[in-house]
Image: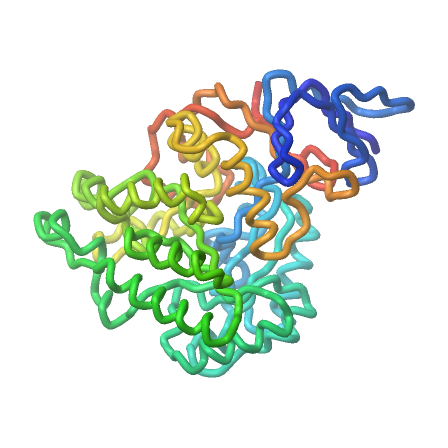
Length: 429
């Protein structure tokens, strides 16, 4: 099959491209890219006039919940949400049941994803057996089975000796160690950010220091071991300052931020009337922290925008705020939030956004994609910069509806998602 994408604005940081071009796809790969292409023989044409054509967006941080928690999400519903949100590939976390801490679970996830045939799925394996933080999981075997990185996400690795060993061992496979940074003694019992807003509304707080002391420890261990560290959902001014310092010292440290953390604050939690859809971990921080994240996105300290897509059943999110689980869905809102709050707000340009959501994620996890270079996988995200969308959870492809963005109108949205040369999703109209 041949697919010719005509008249689009091609934005590809890997090649320094931002201009009107045609893209030819053949046999699942980028076959040609030029100002004007003429194609002989049978082919399909997609007119991308008025649209941005970018290398496929990759989400390094999702929870697909399968196996074990299919009542919240499945690989199929999660992948449907991914392609509807403009993502061609996702990296699911290992906190499933059973935990993805061995090659059999890794293989079963890949097998199910292949059956679904929508977004590419690159499993992230567990650091420790059963996420218990004590004994190292079967990392080498999981790499051979297809795991692309390792994390105990949902739980921090509090055992410094284990963290050191994992950073050393993963160097043999050139894969990153991915960390949820939280000092459990400091965060114990907390439900939102510790600060004036939490005190005012009477909710127990999680201090910024709970995140920052763990980031500092792991940067020190990176310097000791030379291992690759990727810090998930960075939320505080002190946290991004630590990452900035590590980069200045040329340490192999990268970080991600989420759209909800660069958009919302703890004052929004206070105004929500104790709505558990505003509860996530790490929590929404102060306006000062949010602004520090925006600055870090602007100056390149932040490597990746990821969603931390965390679906929960409605019954769970209808509990009291302190009892409800942490987490919100993000796959179907992330691109519009990034376009609206970053590009249209002139925090960054479109080239930098594509770098943060495609080129850099591919580089950080060593994944195929992130480029429209000839011979690369034909994974593309098409964007409509002018589309105005109102977030309507009832229309989500995800099984879950737990979002604080319901009713919000945003400018910019995915227009089509192409995986392996096949159009797997197109916007209505």
